[in-house]
Image (cartoon, rainbow, N blue to C red; front, side, top):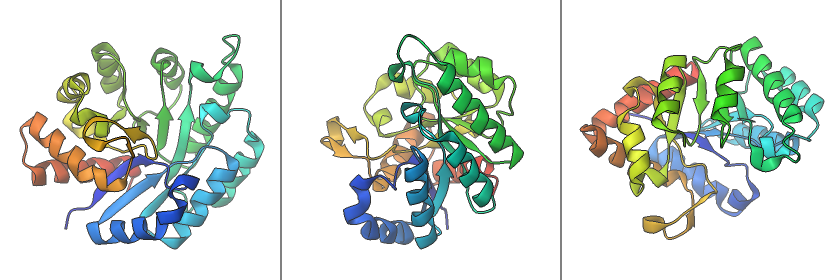
Length: 250
């Protein structure tokens, strides 16, 4: 039986709370696992609590660049105390949309500190890289990139080539179903480095009618990827399962 993986979703977001029992049951029936990423310390606690209720939830702890002023020391302690049970570090990264006066220093400190912990405990990382790929490439030369995911990849073909050369994984989500540029990027991605995600509860237009990302969207993303790459659905699912397990180290 093939397992399906959502490589990046915020299942511990309050928006999912009213229907989380249904979502977890759905994951069990569909044989789906989810890398549940966190935004800050409090959200990381929620992620850990959620993971305790279902082994289909793979907990990632981190500080999103939007929350870079969060208590870094508390998150460090949380990771150190739970490193045996967490699946990865994330969501971490850089984003100029969340800074003032072009001061990246705090974001960079948080990013590099959590990357160091990921290396210490041999954990995969889920990286937010909006409008900051060049800086992330620069910083990551000092870290192991073999189990690093550039989630919701939105770079150029040149950026993609660099990411492949550096050994990053990249993930594509529901937008790929209706966005030609994402389909082109997918077609140029190393087959062994492709992952799929929803990034829920982000909302999606077109065929998704502005609904929040649901883990049940994953089969549609896989079907689209299979069509673009000339694979059957089963072939694509098998490739993604292998890639996901390699990324997670399981």
